[in-house]
Image 1: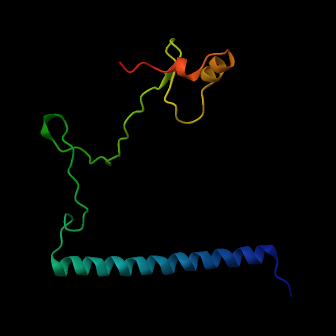
Image 2: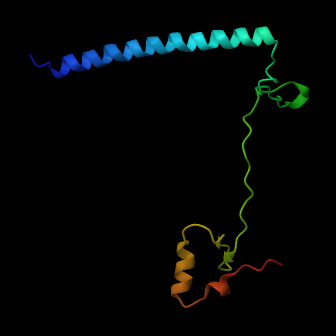
Image 3: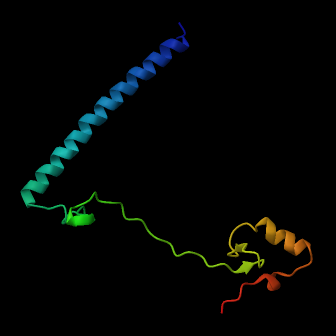
Length: 115
């Protein structure tokens, strides 16, 4: 006898719940072993590379710890049209640059002075 779609979906849901239950038990086992090892060896958050320096709020009170983000340097403009429109020379060419080239200007003419 062929199973109906509803029966198969019910079976999938049952298996999904079983998988979640098994995973939760495994995760708890891992956490317990980690806690045991930390206690046994007297490890600290700093030893594990988990310590973070809290930011200081006004008045010297500890503020929430912010995630550290990698700050990339801003790209300086390489080309400009003289009216404030600029382009770093990276990525897709902006429309103003394409229009200037179509109007007969050369890319070298649009270079921004680095003085």
